Length: 171
Image (cartoon, rainbow, N blue to C red; front, side, top):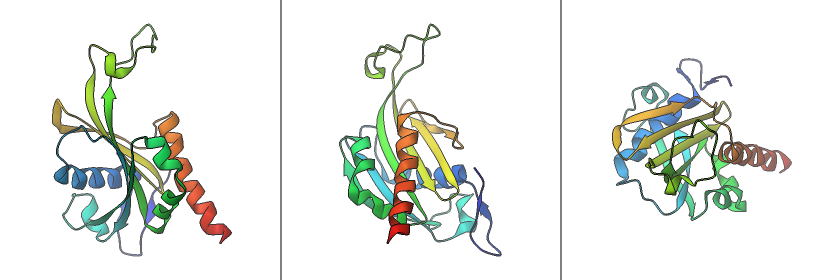
């Protein structure tokens, strides 16, 4: 997807750049990779120029809701409040495991012998979706995705933003 222009003299912010700044801010305030409940945040951009450098104060991050099931969190009627912000962020922790070359995906990641604890932040806004992964065993490294992720969580996050837009348009 494209980028968003926030004003005449403000820098262009890609979804993955925004996601990286959000994840950086949340990482500073979180301890560990064992959150039991997924969280939904509303994101307002305060200093567009500071986002690319993860500057303190570039964003205002507001906690909106949490739930033990990320899909129920995203599907909850009250989650549409996220549309009142410039973007929404979903944070969830869990297990990740490599996909076997044989395509045998029957084993849950939590039982895989090479499992890793992971924290995922997905940000969605009008310009699209970006996400950032951070693993417990390499906490100083991040893996970013500029919106290419596929699957049920990616679909649910996009649906959250689309549904919120439709609800706003209908009012």
